[in-house]
Length: 260
Image (cartoon, rainbow, N blue to C red; front, side, top):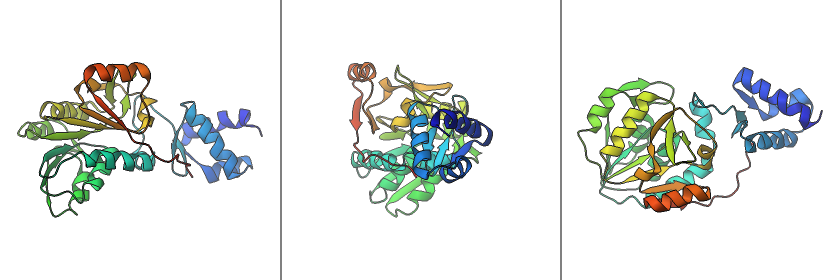
């Protein structure tokens, strides 16, 4: 069976099941694992799938990819971005880390920092930084989003307004070509906007997969970001806007990933 016939069937399976696995597809179609990996890579490059470890998932413009798949997606790139971000976070600072697998990677990169006060609305971040005895951790409270350990809503925003952070590190679900930061959950976006208001300086951490995605709710603009850490160059028009806005862009080079 040629890829011309496989690709539509792979997409249909993904639509029905939410996720496809390399080994399962190879068995279904009677082809090698390498052939299926190539199929999934081509479908991802065309924006029709998102590659994750062991397979792929459907991209979505109205609902986020489920948490475990997001955690696996571009994990090496996220770790490299996180290390670059953490290298610019000083010791003895007050910082905010919001919801997301990229900010969780930053938390892991901060395990050897000292004198930090970290406020977060991400239970996963709090659990990660509990291993750093030189880091004070405060959790905002709020409505628990069980899918990813996020705390959202008016209570979270009210607690954040009691602080003025030296630095906030935020993520986003998608980055529009005009520089708008986008997300899926209106209650989360409200919290993110409060974080931007209460921080003296803001870093954005987002890998290149966010350039190809879309989401319905606007957080704000790259205009409000001091430094954007990512793993691929921005489109020339967007890079020019960032230059006008004095938004620094740090592109972290990572080895090419070959998903399983």
